[in-house]
Structures are given as C-alpha cells and as structure tokens.
Image 1 (cartoon, one colour):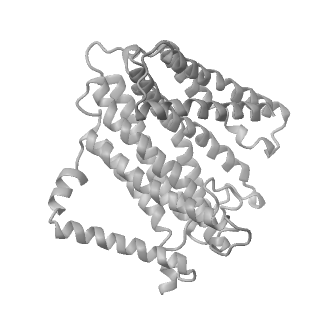
Image 2 (image 1 turned 135 degrees about the vertical axis):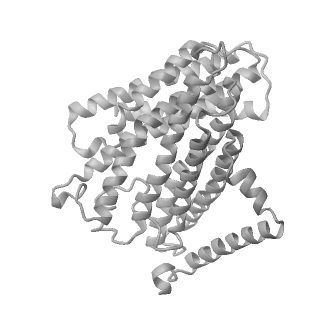
Image 3 (image 1 turned 135 degrees about the horizontal axis):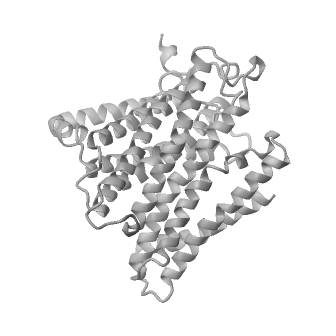
Length: 397
C-alpha cells in the first residue's frame, strides 16, 4: 500500500521525498557513468586511514548541516507571519524534532570528530589511531544511524516529540506512529559508534604518543579532544540505556516511563540530560582546543597558562556530569536539590572563565595576524562570554 510507505497527504512532503529519490538516483548514475565504483570502494568505503575517515566524517557533517539547515529555514518560513499555512502542525513538529537531532548529533558531532580523526595522530606523532578497523566501524555505525534517522522522513513518518523526546509525549499513547521508533533505534546505532570512537581516542592518546611527549607536552587540541573522549565514554552509555528503555516501551509494551502504569516519565528527563549536558562539553571542548591553537599561532606566542588550561579542561569534564538538573529546575525536586545543582552550574563557569583569560593574556603583547581563522576566534570570545554569563544568571535565578 503506497500510503503505508510514503506520506502523500502534504504536497511539500511529497516534493521533498521526490527530491531525495532523484538525488540518490543522480549520485548512483554519476558514479556509474564515471566508472568510479571500484575506486570508491577501494579508496574510501573500505578505508581504515584516519585522515580519509576524518574527511568522510566532515563531509557527512556538512551534508547533515545543510539537511538540518533546510529544516530551520522551513520553521522560519512558517513563523514569519501569523497563522501562515505553509506547514501543517504535524509536519512542523517533525521538522522541529529532526532539526534539533540532526544539528547536534549528525552535524556538530561528525564535524568535530572528523577534525579529531585527522589531527590527533598527526599532533602526537602516531601513524594512525590505536584501532583503525574500529575507527572505520565507528564511522559506518554513525552514518547508518544518520541515514536511518533521515529515511524516516520518507518511510513511515519522522519523529515528532521534540529532539529531547520527553515522555509522556514520546510514548505510544500520544505518538502511536513509528516515527519515534526511528529516533530510538537510529540514535542507538549512531551512539554506539560514537562510544567506540571515544574509546579509540583515549587509547590512542595514552598509548601512541611519540617518544618524549608526556601528557603535559601535548598540544591543547589533543588535550581537549582527549578529555572530550573521556566524557563520551562516561555519558554515552547513559543515553544507550535510556534509548533501550524507550525502545522497550514503544515496541515491546513495557512501561518504564509511563506514569499511569507505575513508570516515571521524569526518569527519561534525568537520563536524557545526564547524557545531554555532558554532550554540550563533548562538542565545545574540541572547539576550545581549536581556538587555543588558533589564538596562540596567530598571536605568535606560546599559549598563556598551559597547565591552568589543562586543569580547567579536566575541571569542566568533572563538573559537566554534575549539572544536569538545571535543565528542569521545575520538576519538583525541591529547594535543596535545586540549590546543589545551581551551585555546580555556577562553579563550572570558573574553569571556563580561566580559558577566557588565558586566551586574552595569550594575545597581550602578541604580534597578532588578523587572518580569517583569527577573526573567527576573536569574534567567538565576546559571543561566548555573553552566553556564559547568561548561564550563570539563570543558575542564580
């Protein structure tokens, strides 16, 4: 039955489905015409070279960035005027959900992991990562999860409970379709690949540094990526468990998160954000490392306060696991619990502030070159400062 597989009620959705189908046909036809299938299989699809895997991560991230960006444009178009009928309510919910998931997990993460794949072995003098085959498997698990998540838009319906998939909305009672099943399974697959990546980078940094390179001699990008990998190993199993319970609830009829059947819907929020807030630092710490390298290079000075930068990164990693309740202060935990997490939220601003001062002191009396990379880094400093101070203000509130 055509209606069982394709959403044909909305012309906009049908047009998008046709575009996806034509794009896939065009890619297959182009590779066939150029007779590049053997080359593609040998040089890229089966490669275990860390640089090529990194490039594939980056290309996937760019592709998903545009995919998520189109969702953002569609939402902006819908809300550009009151009562506009550009999207119906269901389609808007689906786009709202897929935009969030894609931008965080399938755009930001692969872009950063791709750079980590290319750069870390080069910075520590290793020929490759510790487990090249596992590295390739990690990429293809991520890619399979991303494709499974995106194919839901064509077959069966996209997830529609928001990117955080809060219960009870994400339960069978309120979203009985299969869209949120795609969310649960696709994120499981991609998350396992990311977890394997974290393990791989930890072993690579600990065991494969060149002779004479102690931990306190590593470049700052390698340090931040190493700590981000530790956070991955600490937090992604939590997401894996949460998604497994969600899958059981939706497919096998259990009630882990069903309040009316003895479950706890707020347990999902706790598990999700116990992963979700460390995820923020998984994404931002490698970016901090990039800015540290850029500012040092184009100020033509050594990075100011190297040891304090390292300790601040480790402090951020530790505190990142102790702030998750600030995402739902209104859940009813009470003043005592909320106060603890308010304090930890303010505390995490301290090591973050250390990094800001280190960047500023690195530039002090430096011979600054205003390259494109340096201009982006300079713009980041006040932008991040405003956002960070906002977080402290909200914690105090």
